[in-house]
Image 1: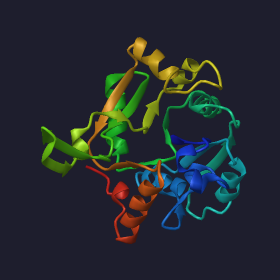
Image 2 (image 1 turned 30 degrees about the horizontal axis):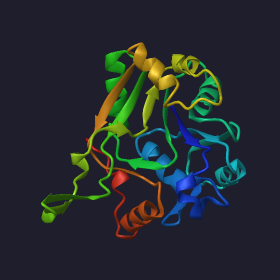
Image 3 (image 1 turned 180 degrees about the vertical axis):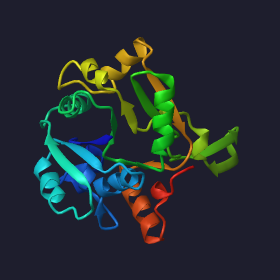
Image 4 (image 1 turned 180 degrees about the horizontal axis):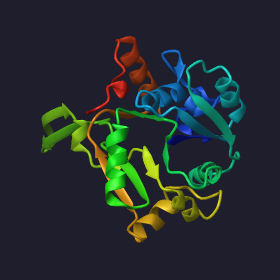
Length: 235
């Protein structure tokens, strides 16, 4: 199987880093986010990648030419204003009879891809999305008439489930995207839901986005401390 990685957005929430490069090229301890994402797949035997580019796509194309790992990587220019739905559709149309993994270019997780794929095959639906708990960003506070009675950092598991990327998509999913300008999350996904063709795979292990400078630093600190929990694949 091949993996599509969405790498064409502007990355406005981390604009300090994205003035001269797309968000997936922001470095975590000397390696682009893209490299870390591909390493998750490669560790589990998935080494064919389609990188859907847009904003400053030439930076990704140039970098792909320098990748020394034994991976088959193609940068697919999908258009500056194209949304996630259009990017996925364009990549899938290049291999119209294939099933794909797909994910975003800004999230790291130790998802067991074999389990994800087995689950997808077991239910027979057209698409599976990995559901994750968002990282807790705020402390939980309890008070009585203004007096704080309890304060503690929230646990990640205290939050609900959200879309964590790491999809499995059957070839028919490409037809659910109606335009390049359509986000996958507000177009194809709701249509799949209406037809009862979208399932969720719940992942309770490590997952961390890189939306802000603080999150970039958190991921960098993990690497500098000798940890890369996104490569500690859950069994």
